[in-house]
Amino acid sequence: MSPLRRLAVFAAASDGKDPALRSLAYDVGAELARRGIGLVYGAGGSGLMGALSQGALDAGGEVIGVIPEEMIAREWGRHDLTRLRVVGTMHERKAEMAALADGFLAIPGGLGTLEEIVEVWSWSYLGIIDEPVGFLNVGGFWDPFLGAVRGIAEAGFIRPEAVSRLVVAPDLDQALAGLESLAQDPDPGPAGSGAADAT
Image (cartoon, one colour):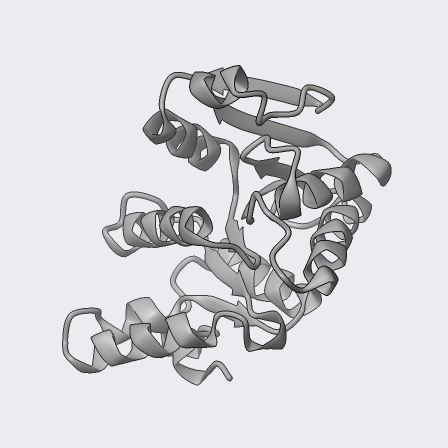
């Protein structure tokens, strides 16, 4: 049985320019459901977020959405989920998602996706949480960001072990394997899969 009962997935609220990414998001949601891993996400109904949640729902999976009241008022959320948690602020949203999840994964997205995954990574870095953090780096999507991370580490502002503990994988199978490995052994030492070696 997977140590990941629920996975928080951060994704774009828009479709982006590459239609293949919408299909990817749908497939991620469907595969999580097939593996019995619940999806925790930002409750959006559009873009990659909408495709992600639809994939999980279509495959019969658990889908928990967490969204601030303001976004519900703007009709940005979907109400056909397994559970919908409406919170007061974006800060409460991220804290609630973190409390519900056993791991975190960023699929392609923009500022919101990047901000969310970096925040939970920083919590892990500070020892606030133990759950693993990863990037689904399909087609090298996250390479520019990961290159910047390596540069910051080389400049001495991020400890190398914090970078090495990031799971970076080109497909979902490898991403889940890396996250599950870290979830089972939260202190793997230098053998952890990491951004420093990602391509």
